[in-house]
Length: 86
Image (cartoon, rainbow, N blue to C red; front, side, top):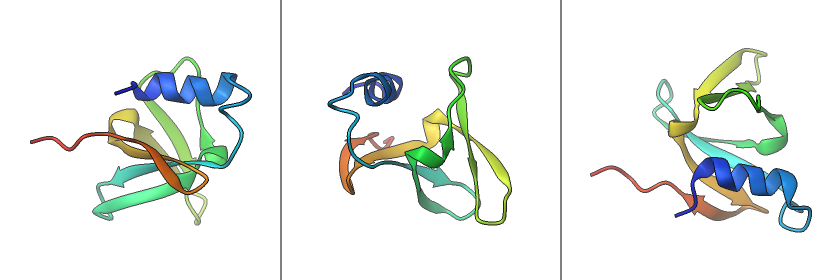
């Protein structure tokens, strides 16, 4: 399986692969479910290899660790999934 950071780099730097609408599905521990956010709404700091930031509908900024990302979608189709732990 491709590591998440490599997939995100490919989306960013490979013009042909990066075409389309991408979204991240991450586990929200408070809501107890997967939340899907468009990648264009995610703030990625190239110096932070631990987490990203996303702003919810109320304007609150959430810092989400990359290990909570469960899926990546391209044009609504899952292209990457993190295996569930046993």
